[in-house]
Image 1 (spheres, rainbow, N blue to C red):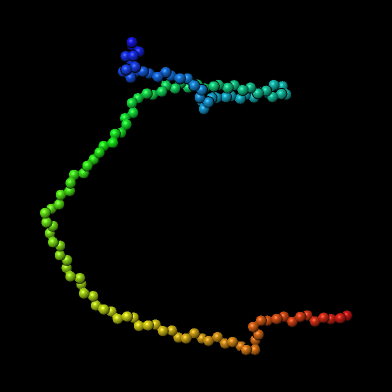
Image 2: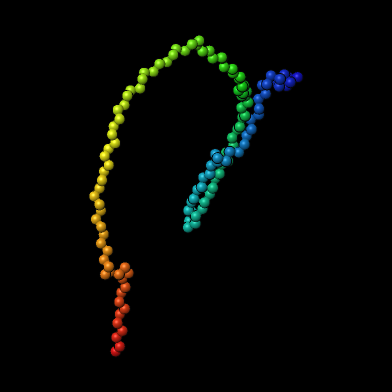
Length: 125
């Protein structure tokens, strides 16, 4: 009966669990020289951690509906008047710029378009 009363009140505390925690393990390696030989010893300690779960009520957001109020306007908006646009004067186009003619290139008729090297002469001994 007492268990049912506690269960209905929602005050059941979860049990603590002990588990291995390898991240906190430690080891000591010791080296000695006995005579002419080397001796090594290793001492390891295993770590354990106690895990107690936290049980609590998490508030869940609830959607809220929203309706905007109706927008009211003034009965008559005042008339808007604008000043006349300023007058602009017409400016004549700039005069065209002319350049002197480029010098002509001279093409010589006596020079061949493709140059060829003369073949070496053959000498008989």
